[in-house]
Length: 304
Image 1: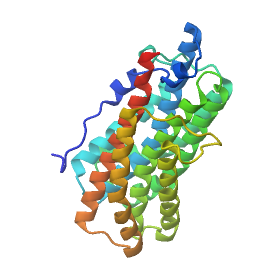
Image 2: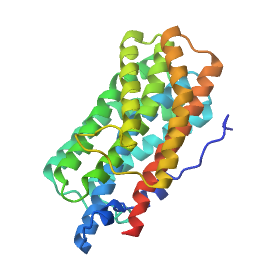
Image 3: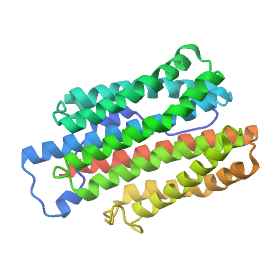
Image 4: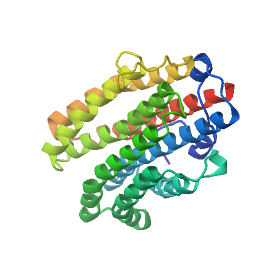
């Protein structure tokens, strides 16, 4: 049983919601069927590559909670699900999937970026699979996972931005950036909690202290960008629709609760069982909020 309530979110159903947000209509653009199909395809490429970026941190975080025996059954399920989704999404990016309205990838530079992620996954994947199969996280497994997961995250980030560069004419820039920034926030929500735990456990504490401070700063910047208070790549993001704003308000509410906990762990270099349970709760809640936000951004396509 889970220790706490959380929104139930079906990623596969989320993946079926496709297209371009109403900002396209507001811009006065008239989309032909072929243009609309291209926008749908690219929006999914961005969303799925963003998922891969998040999975790298979500799997590492889940492994840490399994190791610490915090809601172990739940986080074993998280690890198994994200592991399977990572492999599935890599296949979808290459081969396409009619269910996602995605065509097989033809761009050589995008295929090269996908292949590079695959090389990293060949190192990270087996270490995670051992945990999935055995339910055991020993020092060797955890050290390997922690050493490689951020590197693979960087490769997935490069893949996403390669897609955005190669297909920049297929999707309104503001929409592409909204999807990207919301995805970065989702990834950072998992990454900084993982980093705070590692500092508290004094696992390469100096390195993870620096990474944690950087992640927290970037997370704050992301909130400002989504609120239109900070430029992203010299662009002010479009104003969010009311339902998306409501999800962002939830994220801001949980950030007010989470930030002091992260700062405390970073300073004290220790964590109580109650603090670890609270971090597990916040990790799930923020993951769900940003997943819902991304779903709403894509769902606005139905009006186009």
